Amino acid sequence: MTDPVVAPRKLSLVDRLLGRVPVGSEPIEEILTAKTNEGTQELEPRSSTGVTEYGLESGSLLALAEGVSLDRGDIDVDVPEDESMILNLGPSHPSTHGVLRVMVEIDGETVLRTKPVIGYLHTGMEKTAEELMYHQGCTNVTRMDYLSPFFNELGFCLSVEKLLGLEIPPRATWIRMLMCELNRISSHLLWLATNGADIGALNMLVYGWREREMVLAFFEKVTGLRMNHNYFRPGGVAADLPDGWRDDVAALCEALPRRMDEYDQLLTGQPILQNRLVGVGPLDAETAISLGVTGPLLRSTGVAWDLRRDNPYLAYDKVDFDVIVGTSGDCWDRYAIRFNEIRESIHIVSQIAEKMPPGDYRSQDKKVTPPPRSRIDESMEALIHHFKLYTDGFKVPPGDAYVPVESPRGESGCYIVSDGSARPYRMHMRSPSFSNLQAMAPMARGSLIADTIAIVSTIDPVLGDVDR
Amino acid sequence: MAEEQETPAVRLLHGCPLDETLGAFVVHCDRDSYLELCRSLRSDGYAMPVGVTGVDYLTHPGRTVPQGVDAERFEVVVELCSLVARKRIRVRCQVPESDPRIPSLFDVWPGTEAHERETYDLFGITFDGHPDMSRILMPDDWEGHPLRKDYSTGEIQVQFKEARR
Image 1: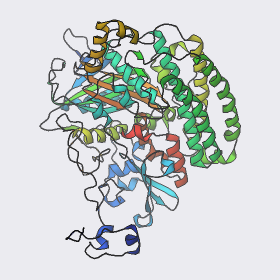
Image 2 (image 1 turned 90 degrees about the vertical axis):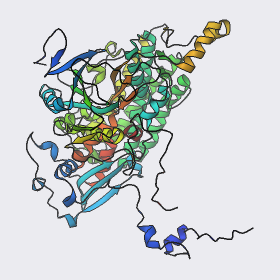
Image 3 (image 1 turned 45 degrees about the vertical axis):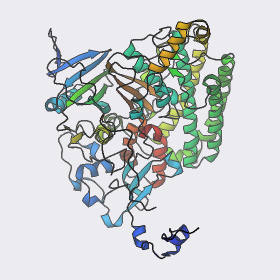
Image 4 (image 1 turned 180 degrees about the vertical axis):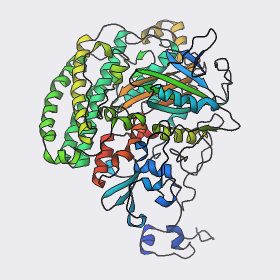
């Protein structure tokens, strides 16, 4: 059976490459010039860029005092416009850690301007959160920063608990701390691996993933999943720690410091690594603060700002740890800070394992916690209660709350507005990667293209968190 | 907070009502006093812009705002942090539906740049004086602002509509 109307043949890849134009189809030029919907998100030529935006991209804006107007001539890019080149790094490039696109204007190898373009992973999770009930919310937020899922869940749960005025039992608090610190270790280990890969220390890539897998195996034992756990719930955690968790934690606390010493030997003294990182992409404290930069990036500039110490949540005031601070704010400081934060976290984890209190792992408030499985078999009321809680959810009093936590990347916070119903009226995640990415332009200015890769790597953005 | 005043009805900070909810300090203001208030807070030591976001109160009109503040459809929420004093403050600014515009805080804290672009993208609130008021998360030719409460979730635009099949 043949169709009477002959449809024009589609262009195959071979046709395109050879420049063939099949009969009945449109000329090749039109296909090649077909617009994408990227639109104007591009690095415009300097002559058609506004002075303020230009200053922002070249990173010179932050040096100006208040009230001083910027003149195009003030920006010390003395390369004529027709001698520079605009280059796209990404969105699909292994060193961009996801789908980050960085547009750079370069003069030879020197970077003149940088503009990160984001949004490739935007999935509207803040809109989705408005449709989910509070007990479902963690499933959603855990997928934002997929390398540190516990911190998203923690921010969300603490915000909901603040709105509810709910006190959670001490064991739940300490379990949350244990999981968060282990998560910080796994996230920094992965950073160590990918940073190694980015700057040419490829062997570190394998070791970092291997060690991270040890931590993820523990997560799987506790939560059932390696990532995207949905383990923290408003009111506590989903399940108690499994039998034998102390042995697993002790094994981790014993193995990891030794491995860290090995990596110290492998990386820290290595002259090639030092040449790639020392003095690259410096950032000063004032710029970092005014850009809203947090986490290891801010601490590398010498500002001792760690929410675990300066804005204590959970029970961080009951454990002993140091805040690691750098001096010059370059890539080397960021490397050293993350490296030593792994050691500090191991120190915290061993303290938590010692001090873990007995008791309930979730709140006994009937409003948010379902009855235990055994009660459902015995009691009609418990069955109805369970059913109502999972179909209607629990109502949260009207108001707004913002609770920040110190994630491996910086301040991760959840802003929730409640209208008194069982679903958040508005849920906003303040993601550290989103703010930290703004420091890209001032850091990369004047560096080499290869350094730009090291700079993106030491910002450690998780694009799922940037785009949400 | 030098100019903080204790009055029986409403506490004022730089002439704007100061509220305390769930342990957090919240200053409410309108568009006219927004930029001035933020500049004053900046000189008070709130050096770090933690975040800027928006809320669309279309389907939740009966929220409580302090006396002297007219509730509008949109709110721009700015979270600020003082590293020295270890204090936080939240600014909630009312933005009317008829003219969703507000001055940009870019000159006060350059770190609000990306956050304001995001708020523009998702809520359609324009920030006057922003160096690059373009979409940041959605594609440039996207119609509508997804986090508005009257944005239909059931209807999905066909993306890449200009690309050839």
